[in-house]
View 1 (cartoon, rainbow, N blue to C red):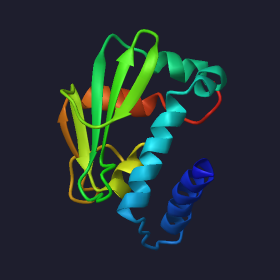
View 2: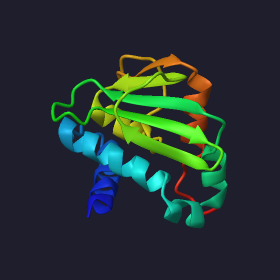
View 3: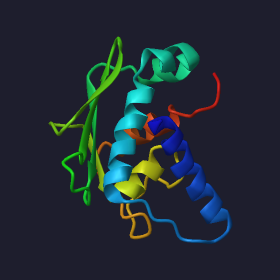
Length: 146
């Protein structure tokens, strides 16, 4: 069910953008959907269906952190580690090679590349650390079949 909500929110944003309308997602809902998104990207099913993507997400211990600045239900941080056997994530924070922070809605829409990974007032996204690592993650999590 949460995968369908992810799709509805992301494609609802696409439709609102095409119609030149603003969109608003509750920060706590957006935060829950970020966890769902990361679960999908690090699952065995993703590796089977998108092997090139799953392979590109592997690493040697590189870490990424996503921080929502406006979520209130405690689900406001996601820590990702790229390991040789595949990427994994957990809720919470840690010492990271790159930290991407901003409002939960902006993070949610940055992860599927609806908003750019950029430092700027339009997206309210801040990147601290290895921005190339964060961009690599985004570039290699496309939903297109590989």
